[in-house]
Amino acid sequence: MKSLCNKILLAFLILFAGIKVYALDVVYPTSYNMNINAPSTFFVGNTNPEEILTINGVKIDVHPSGAFAQKVPLNIGKNVFTITSDWNKKVYTINRKAILSVSYNNSNPMNNFKKFDKEKFVYVKKDGTALRSTPVEQGINRLSHLEKDVILKVDGEMYGLYRVVLSENNYAWINKKAVYENVINEEPETAKLIAKSFTQSNHSKFYKIKLTQRIPYYVEESNPLVLHLFNTDGSETVFPINLKHNLSGYDAYYEGDCLVLEIKKKLNVYRFRPLRDITIVIDPGHGGNEKGAVSCLRNYEKDINLKIALYLYKELSRKGANVYMTRFTDEFVSLNDRVKFSNEKNADIFISIHANSLPDGKDPMKERGTSVYYYYNESKPLAESILNNIVNKVHTNNDGLYQRSFAVVRNSRALSVLVETAYVINPYDNILLINEKFQKNCAKAISNGVIEYLKSIQIN
Image 1 (cartoon, helix red, strand yellow):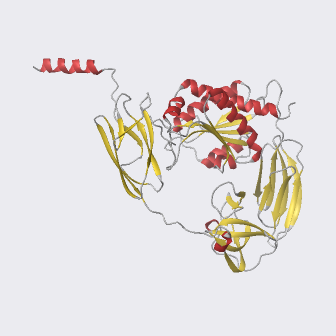
Image 2 (image 1 turned 180 degrees about the horizontal axis):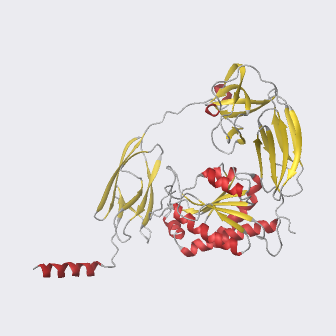
């Protein structure tokens, strides 16, 4: 009898060997009960493509791979969704709260400004603190990134930010939590200029201004490049630097009480080997316990990024560039360490590789394709060249060129871009992203985009 049972079990194993077992896999929402404060959300996942998928009884299209993505509207309060795929069934409850709208006087937003009876003086708490042009804690409104112990004069507050008095009728904004709470009530002595000097290395020119204390500044990205320096008495000093070449990276920072303006030297581009002597840092986004976005088929963005980055590493190295990677394996690297690594390598170009996702309120079936991001205007031509090459040679949708305040592109001294190769939560893009041929072609297109950009600037 035991022998007969074993034979029956073996027969079943042989019968079902090689047959893929499907189960309804919902990648997003990530739990059966969620709070989502948006007018809509979406279901993303995969199932047997031969089965009928429904959400609350409505049939949903399924990609031949089994991947699906479907936008659903959300009413205020409790929303219940039943998703079925033949005998598979899952029930999700999504709660949407009614958000009270706060009405501001748009014709005069400064009505919300609280002016102090007397100006105060505060010190910046840590390096890399954003000095902003508007009272909004996001976006591309950063004037500069101030170092610890920079002294600021503030005359009021709004939306959790102090208004910084730079000079007469010239203001900036800084987060209240970014400065020492024990403000200085007495006006400090004004900073004095001790000395100016100039040095250079193989990669950069250094303009140095020795002061008696750290005061705020920002750099105007133009030609001439202009360093604006603001004293505590409200005076402004301007240092223009004439450029004889396209700007290819700069930074301003304090070394002690010495303000340094570092300007990268002109890129040496050779006609027949444009990548020769060019140093490029490739940054595969996410890694380790930071998975990034999760695709319809439950692929992790971190793995896709790394594969494309490794192909790009081979392409650029083969064509003569000095290439470095922020990670070669599945490991976590902080944003600060990625930027620090690029600066330590004196990178001429920094390329961060990502795959895109979407927030609630968007439609993952309508969003497809490649987008490229930059922060400094000097990096825009490179970003545009890379985007055009990917779209034209890999045939993804053109999802646009954008200026955004991403940490890895705003803090690097190199020409820096972030490439969103395609959308992991779109079924059609998902299939592309996990395809080896697409990954290689995407790497080739990025490489060609770099080369075309280099050829467009002055050639030796």
